Length: 313
Ligand SMILES: Nc1nc2c(ncn2[C@@H]2O[C@H](COP(=O)(O)OP(=O)(O)OP(=O)(O)O)[C@@H](O)[C@H]2O)c(=O)[nH]1
Ligand SMILES: [Mg+2]
Ligand SMILES: [Zn+2]
Image 1: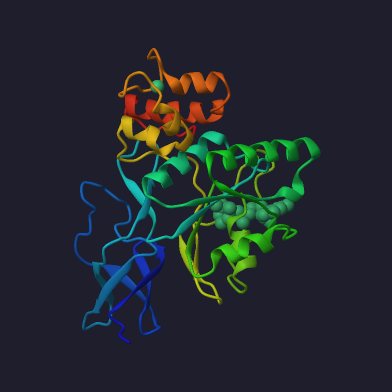
Image 2: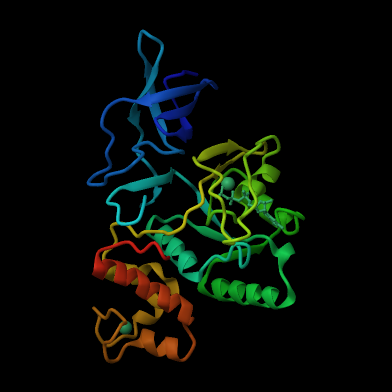
């Protein structure tokens, strides 16, 4: 097996770590122009990419080619920025790690992530972490969230990376798959992965007491192999999920239950905001569609109308 092709397993700024088919880990730089069509990205090569590499006579290795991607998850890199960041490429599934407290993950954030993953055809499992910290009323709220998202059509797991509760149901889902772990900062992605991958020694940090938010401890994406087959990807916590290259009329299609009801709208170009005979708004009024989901849908539509990314989500 050769050292001229491999898998990008880590990306720290300008260096990329490539695990070659020959089993060696080589730090590489980029050569050439790898811009995605019409997209300005802060990282043209992403964790999960398969690449070709060459070494120059001084021994420095360069990535010279990226193999076609099966899929990728991309987001706007910062507020009002035109630049985007590819979180990972060629993933089989994403685990969105969510906490109802410490910190609180907003439903808008969850829904925007889910809609984006639908757009890239990446299946998502919602993993509600830190259940060990919840009081009775918070547990009831958690159960409501689980019912909501299961009804929409997403698998949900309740776990604690601290007490390991529920981890027995999570582990088998990872076998032979490439799984991206994403979510807000401080929800416990790296803590969970330290348990899943013994010896990973990923950095973790307590969330801020004052702000009830994470400390952005993980600063780059890293892919880790599982002993039983498969890979997991730890990623930096994200605040918002700016939608990318989505047309307003596409957005509805990424909200499964809204899309289903939209077939009953009087006008087939209905935006479900003000039109008469709108079956979606009727379903919201009659509680067939959760109001929080409809609000998230509207927030994504508004992005488009205002042409900007709103960090608040
Ligand atoms: N009680 C409790 N604490 C947890 C649990 N999971 C993680 N934590 C704690 O939450 C804090 C943040 O965990 P991290 O693993 O650093 O979070 P992260 O999602 O990787 O955060 P970023 O790297 O900043 O995106 C740490 O103090 C963990 O010990 C859990 O299930 N229960
Ligand atoms: Mg982390
Ligand atoms: Zn409508």
